[in-house]
Image (cartoon, rainbow over all chains, first blue to last red; front, side):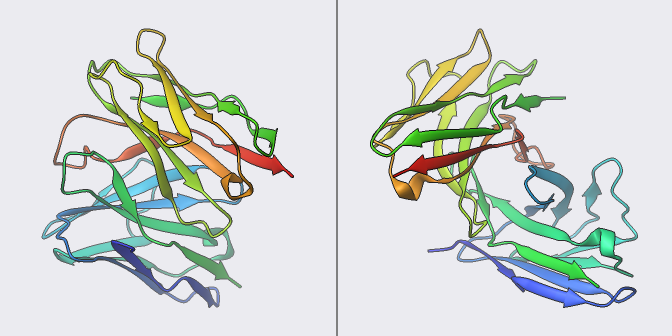
Length: 116
Length: 118
């Protein structure tokens, strides 16, 4: 079964509004989570690293004031797209590292954001 | 910074045949993890196979196997007895061996879309 759950799977919003996406680790604690963005037919690009109890680390070129990340607990990270515009429409995927030594990341189901 | 390159945007294979997807990477680290992830139309990322760089033996998972050439920095995926359910985007990914401070992040290649011909 899924070990990382993401919600909502689809969201449509009007331009100028804010949208929150939640990412939960199930049955394990994640001090770090990663947020990726994927445009149609493209690869996953890392947006930011979410750190429990501290500020997120953003990749170069990602606007931290537009993409607010909060990691308030060991099982929940949220991504808020503020003042969304059509160019923010994309597929957003969260992930959390395996707690074992496999090195893999567990991925959420993804959230498709459409900004009208 | 590490980079991952997949030079085949699209591949197709006849059902029950074998196909190999290519991946090369660039790194200055001596130890690391490499992965192949599958992304079907549902967009859920699914781990196919993983390889630790210090292990010389190529990883195998049922019909999936890799050809890991560390000196050449090559990590190809072989799918044997291809099935319709194998149709998906396949991403090669690199991970640092370090833990903490975000080092667990994956760097992905551009992906290869695999089509299975019935």
